[in-house]
Amino acid sequence: MLAALLRRVERLAVWLAGAGAAIIVVQMLWISYGVFMRYVMSRPDGTVTEATALLLFPAAFLGLAFALKEDAYPKVTFLPDALGPRGRRRLEILNLLLMIVVGGFFSIAAVDATMRSFASGASSEILLWPRYLFWAPGALALVVFTFYVALKLAVLLTSHEPRPDSQPAQRG
Image (cartoon, rainbow, N blue to C red; front, side, top):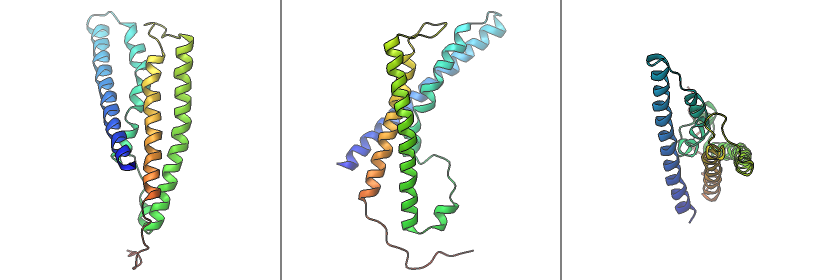
């Protein structure tokens, strides 16, 4: 059951990362349009800066769960390499717990900001687009990331703890 839920969340992570990639393509095209209008047509478009800035928040967070799925976060490996299997497992548990705390904090903040911007009817300054439309994808991505980390922790905690190595690690 836990493994099936983990696979579904991983599939959702791929879709969220794809949405983030699509947002980046839209930003690229919009910025290219803005550069063309400013330097070729000599008619700068004020909406370009605001629109691409508003799209930064969702684009920044939509790939979080996918990066975790692909183990793509930067790591310092000298400590895990020096530890045995039990030590590596405990370090992974600590790492996942820290991700839950940080992801949970940002999830709460993003969901709160989404709900407040929806309730207030706040809109962007130039385009007058509702702000919650820009907060919602990032908030969703942060909630999915935190849930995914919690699932990975649950899988790790329910798996068998590795036996200590029979031979000490080679030192070079």
